[in-house]
Image (cartoon, rainbow, N blue to C red; front, top):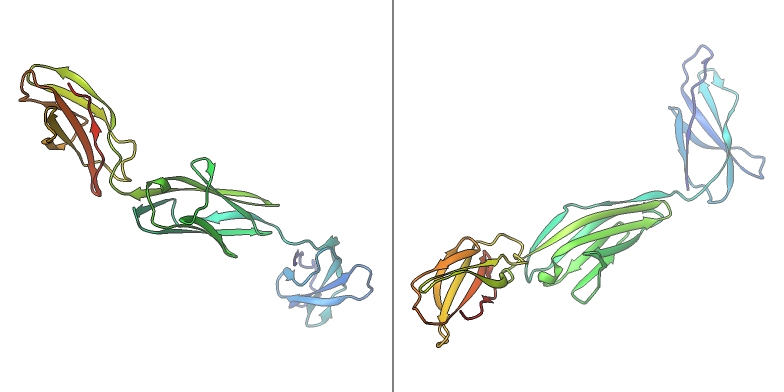
Length: 270
């Protein structure tokens, strides 16, 4: 434990420039004063104090002619263990990882006494598994994710708490992979003898990047063969023409991003 001391310089220097100061200390219950620090400026740090022990400090100025009378610094003080409010330092707030790759996020932790660390994912306490776990060192908290998948996508909160306070940081993990399927049901906005207009909603899970296009396929329900209507649909609607009158059709839609193609959203037969 340590004490930081400050004082004012003397009003009179005795006609000679002050060269420095000597700090003396007296533990409570003893008569002896001992020199614990020397300083050229009006402050000093005294280290090696015992927690719970009471101390008195005094300071003397000196110049070429000698030392001043000692001046007592403040009231006696009781040494306590230093407390530092927690703080967390993150290199980034958003992390992207390709599906199947490992991810390690290290957060610098500052605080005394040593803060207690907790992790939350999407509002719930982070469940540790053989694949997802947290580690603590003397100076950091580390989140390890092995073979990341879309379950790891989300918002994470790390909290550090000690007797001096609490610190919180938020981070997001984006897992880059093929998207989830478009959201249904498939709507039939227009149905005619030889064409239909269908629409759908974008995927709830985009795979961490933008959807490039949709692939729309059709099949005559009397066969199991699917035919591509268009593999470059930019919007969430399409007019499908040249249908045979009186034939029942089913349609399916895939979403595609740079990492691949989703599972399909299938329409009801029409």
